Image (cartoon, rainbow, N blue to C red; front, top):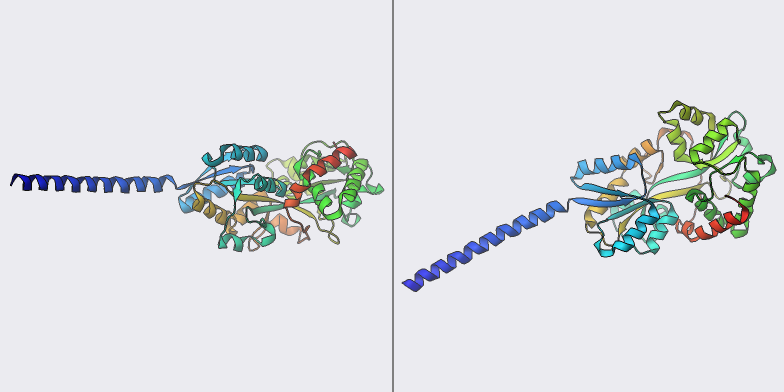
Length: 352
């Protein structure tokens, strides 16, 4: 009798322990599930449009987006240093060469998604599926409407001709946009022609390179020079600025897409990659899918004046007003491969 009683007590205790453990497991599982409703982004794109896209994504999915901003090269080094302990799930940056650098430093991993492949054409995705495009921008010629007619313009190469002597404005050779522009010429035309172009540009400078892209447009309007080279999205930002002086500048410059009968206008890309040691892979891929969706793409184009990578997305009205254009056809990896040579040529030809 005593032993039977003892047996029942032991059995009851065991069942109670099992029940408590089960509850604890469920709670822990629930807590774990709740804690992983997030995605961590390292980004070198410092645009308000991206912040709003992250906010919209969180509202739709309940997934919190944690953002760390910084210089692209510094973020790549941080990812290498952190290794498996990194919290980063995604890396975002501008420039195909920088994306290639991230891939070559092995901080990214292959990502697969039918949705992403549908949203982004193959030519705007990495050939090894380690990053996908988010937006593009063209590096175009801008000109003073009151002094230059568009029919006087044709190619990047033509800017080195005598008719533009003392009339060309462009920013420093230390700028990545210019480095990638020259890198594209190295890929398409060869080193010798690229060097020749750089030297010809220096000969025709209206002044030593100074300021950012917007400053080139302002200098064109001020009469310092007649033509300049700048990225298209800056023109959109000027035209929609809260500062009337900048709006006036945008209204007084024309936009010309060069090399339409040859290699096409230079286009660079912003892209996003899945980090090698992502802890929230499903959430990360879901965010990429959203950022490349028609909704997000149209928002980025409307607010940051970049060209959508999703062909179904409508461009901002200003971009539509410029019409369609032919773009360079090259692998974006080559921008990184030729970066060092581009810097060497700039130094050799005196482009400061």
